[in-house]
Image (tube, rainbow, N blue to C red; front, top):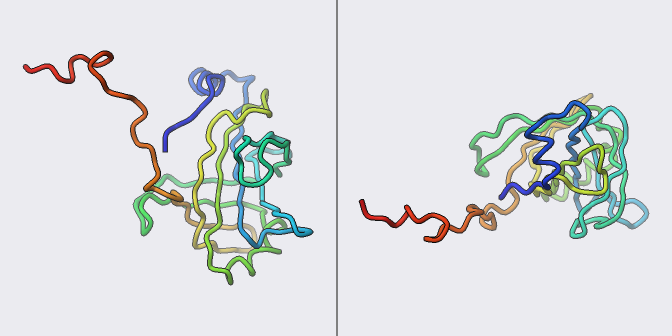
Length: 178
């Protein structure tokens, strides 16, 4: 999965200006997440207030539109090698009000939840600054205060590994004989 970031995101990440806030979002999509006959993904932003963001044009639900993301605290552990390759544990706090109405039916369907991560700059809510990264969420457990599950890469066989084209013009020393 190549790291895709806008120039503004890369500059904010490199210089870390105190007036530029980088907001991480997660969107959870599943066939049973439906309201009034329409898909109703759970959208969370790691922030203290709800924020409206514009999704990229190719987004699975609501592409190109401005949608609300609810302020829901979440954290992700450092990835490790698990049953599905690289896996990471994610915890979403106080999400029961959003997920409780769907979780029972989602477990019955036995289909993974699609998780899409995006990064936005608070100064530019209309541009996805980093991502989107598509993962799957499995083994979801609900406690009184949080949801916990395992994130894995959705289709690792479709990952583009190398972003650079290594040729003689740009890297002449690669084919030199010593």
